[in-house]
Length: 261
Ligand SMILES: CC(C)(COP(=O)(O)OP(=O)(O)OC[C@H]1O[C@@H](n2cnc3c(N)ncnc32)[C@H](O)[C@@H]1OP(=O)(O)O)[C@@H](O)C(=O)NCCC(=O)NCCS
Image 1 (cartoon, rainbow, N blue to C red):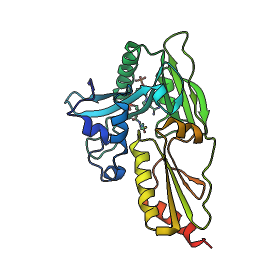
Image 2 (image 1 turned 180 degrees about the horizontal axis):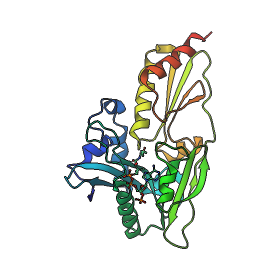
Image 3 (image 1 turned 135 degrees about the horizontal axis):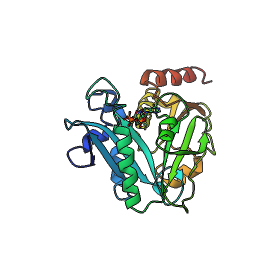
């Protein structure tokens, strides 16, 4: 196995989260591309794992925490680690040590860059990005927001623990219309996909639906709402992990449109 840096020959693959086989991924739009354009000058780091045959099977992306959606200082934050686990395309690379190797490479890199520690997020559920996996890699839980767990591994004695930025406001309904409100940051293709689906679905209802978009890459917007990625229909949050289908979002809007007086 070999850990390599992001380069011209693997950037396209990383951009689609190693899912170059997936038609769904094609619907995720260009938000990650835009995010990359801004983050490459703000300390974004990306590494990829190749197996012994030179096939890329895993990726990790991490940024200075000051340029993430977490509160903290002097740390790096892993917003995504993903070892391809589907049978489709390149196949399942999980549980062969790739994740561990990627995280170790990222930690070594962060230390060299002078970071005081590493932070990461996971969920306290037995699937998706399990917080338990990070615990096994020596991370400690430091904050919680529902099922989302923030973990960290300090490298120095003076490292200060990170904190979630929590939700402070909820979008309000718009009289006489269905309000479809999206919050999107760009770092996650799954969340970018939700945004694109919601935008398209809302447009089907013409004047009856109003589409609102908040760019949470803007830290002021992020702090004003305390929401990084999310979809709300008439102020009600729709669960977006995993992303709801286009059809489901369209149906939810249609139901509300019927009730407009
Ligand atoms: C979590 C993940 C990165 C781990 O990578 P991996 O290559 O499968 O894991 P590794 O083989 O490196 O595992 C390292 C260790 O963790 C253990 N482990 C593996 N999966 C685990 C799990 N789900 N829970 C707890 N421990 C686990 C392994 O047994 C191994 O233990 P060892 O060090 O004692 O041998 C990978 O499974 C993954 O990508 N999961 C989906 C995450 C996701 O949804 N990412 C997108 C979020 S934006």
